[in-house]
Structures are given as structure tokens and as C-alpha cells.
Length: 464
Length: 80
Image (cartoon, rainbow over all chains, first blue to last red; front, side):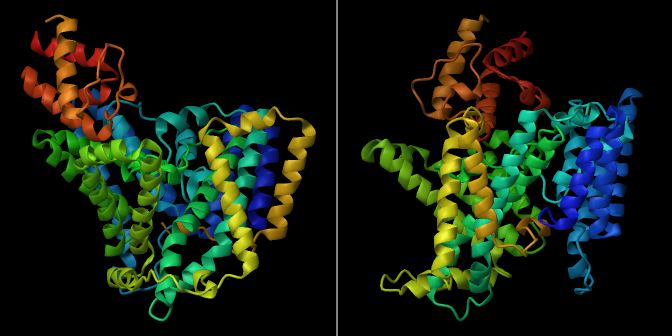
């Protein structure tokens, strides 16, 4: 059941009405039932897997806490359970490869809720969090339907207190949430889904298309991925707001980043902050005697892990490896960059740095998108920079209509991101007169229906 | 050791590690206030501080440090 489907709209409406009709305690049951239907609708096995992981995590956290209180070996329980979760996740990830492509389907959302479970157990182990004793609250933390498929990967300290005291959303929270959902729809339907088939086409026939088309697909894929994933995230956060829940932000205008290190503080924040807190910090603490080399080694391990999180295969490992390598290089060359900044001026340096960061990310995404490492290298080797290419080559087969629609949507999204970076645009928008607000609402909804590409339900991050 | 004396030594370490001459730490200074003090440089700073004062922090102690004041108290407790 995708966010963009009639089934989801019906489930959402039923859940929303019931949620606002029943008592405080009843709200939890409404949300847990809706989450169960949402997950089970894809495949009942997915629901069973998610329930087993959730119940296991719930029990183990209590065991860790009790063992600590009774001065028993809680470390063994913690490390044993983390190993179980990781092995289980890797087992599901590699099941197809191990069984010779037997058609085994990786349970939807598993990478997200497994990481959420590991994070929660670690917080309990570190005594930063108390083990949750209310099973319904814990199941809600793990299975809430709006963030189940592709995150955000929520922290227990942020979400558990909210699900313990569910309350109806205020009017302004509801309108904020609805606006976010519409913005998510624009990103997904008016931008991502329009350009996706053409970029997919270039990647799937990379051996026959021209070098200029490879270059264009490479440059456009970050935009598609951003529009698709941040569109999903906006819809997830917006849906959460309609139930009075504040989910974690996942993007903070990433294409304004001047370095790759900064980029990863702005891109898929719930994952990058997860690997920072639970992999990089402990590792860099252990290796801190090695100085800069310890940081470099920890960074490489962390980013390769971040890459592997996306899926089985060397392509994702290389994708992560590139990110780590670039950040290490940025650390080592900070002095030189500061000198260049002084020489060419802050503004020009910032512009060039933004472009450089985007290009590095675009190149690394070739490994993320390609079927194999050799395909990715072929893709990059075959890129051509010839300047006399025809418009037909440059637009990778997109019609002028699609170029204009997607181009306009991209411009609007970048403007929206820019103004959001200067302060909450929604709060300023709320202060406008009703005439302005409703004109904008009608225009955007009209644009979605008139120019949106319906019929593609899947989001890229659904596969992870 | 007095806090002011400690802050002077920490200033020196921060300036050396972060390669910036304009750092002036106070007890309320946090990572947000100092250019270059982030998750990537934090452990190098801690390691330098440990070497300077001959102390060793646990990982959880490091994570719980919220500002330079916390760091000063932690160093003073370890060197008592």
C-alpha cells in the first residue's frame, strides 16, 4: 500500500476519523491497528517479521535493564541481541544471493526498523533510556505506519514520549501537515516521476546511449533521488502531524552543502546521525590515540557501513567508501581550501564548493544506481563532455513539455528549500491573508493534478 | 588548578588542533560556538587533552560533555 494509492487514502481517512473520535487510550489502538493493516496489506509475512523483531527488542531491553540492576552480565545480553538483529537483517538481505535468486523478497521497512531497534537497545544499554514497559507504546514506536516503509529512523527519546501521550493535532499542526503532504506530492509526482523513466532508461541501456546522455543522467539522478526520497519524507512527516506527531527531519537543503561532510549533515539525516552516534562516535573514541588516522579509519568504516545498509552488493559498499574517502580528503586539505577561499573570495569559493560537492555526490550515485561495480566504471569512463551535442541528446529523450514541467518544479522546490533555510516559510505563510493562502493552495493542487505523473506508486527507498 | 588556568591551556589545544588563532573558550562555550569543532574533530581534541593532563575519559563520559565547563570539571575531577 503506497502513500499514493486509493487504499492508503481510505485507510488514512478511516484512521484519522476514528483517532479523533475515540478516547485518549483508544487512539493507541486505532494507530496500532492501522499500522498492522498497512504493513500486512503488502504481505502478512512482513507484518510477522516486524512483530518478531519488535517483540524481541522489547523483551531484550527489559532483560538488559534487569540484568544490570541485579549486577548480572548485561553486556552479554546486549551484544548477543545486537548480533541477532544484525545477523537476521543480513540474512534477509542476502537470502536471495545465498539461495540462488529464489525470488525471496526482503521484508519492507526492515532496514529502518532494525536500525531503530538497535538504536533503542543501545540507548538502554548506555542508560540513556529506560526500557519501555508498555508493549503497545513500544509497538507504536516501532511500527507506526507513516514512517514504517522508509523512515525517518526515529530515536526512542523523540518518539516514545509522543506515543505515550497521544493527543489530537492542533489546527495549525494539521494545516502544516497537509501542506507538507502536498509539497511531497509535488516533489514526487511533478518532478521525480517525470524524469525517472528517462534516467532509468539511460542506466539500463548504458552500453548503447551516447556519452552526453550518460553525463546528463549522472547529473540528474541526484535530483530525482532527492525529489523522490524527500517527497516521501515530507508525506511521512506531514501524515504524522495530522495525528499530532512530530517525526524527525530527514533533509535540510542538502544541495547547499559546501563539503561532503556538511552534505551528510543535511542528507538522510536520520540515517547519517544514526551511524554517527552508534558507529562513528564509539569507533573514533576507541581509535582516538591514533589522532587524525583514527578519525580517518572510523570514517571509512562508518561510511562503508552506511553504504552497505542500502543493500547487498559491492556497489553500495563503493558508494559509502567514496563518501568516507572524500570526507577524509576534505579533513586533510582544510588548510589549502582556506587559502583558496582567501584568494578567490568567499562568495566564489562557496559557489564552486557547492558545485564540487554536488558533482562528487552525483558521481558516487552512479555506483548506488548501477547494477554492478564494473557497470558503474563503464558508465563513468564513457561519459563525454563534447560541447556540440544536440538538444535531443542532452534531454535524454524527455519531451519539451516534461523538461518545462520538471524544470519549473525543480526551480520551485529549490526556492522553497532556500526560503525554508532562512526561517520557517510555513509560519510566515500562515500569516498571509486567506485570499493569498487559498490561491496558492488551489494553484499547487491544480499543478499536481494537471502536471503530476500518476500511476507510479513506488518510491526509490522502498527497496531498502 | 583554577578554571581560568585550565581554560588557557584548553585554548592552546583548541587553537593547535583546529588551526585557528581566534578561539577564546569560556565555560559556556559549546561546539556550536567554535568553527571547526564538530564530530570529526572532537575525538582528536579529547585525545590531545588526555595527553596534556595525563587523564583518560570513558566513551560515555565524553558523550555526556555538553560544553567547555563540563570538560573543565571532568578534567579537575580526574586530576584531583
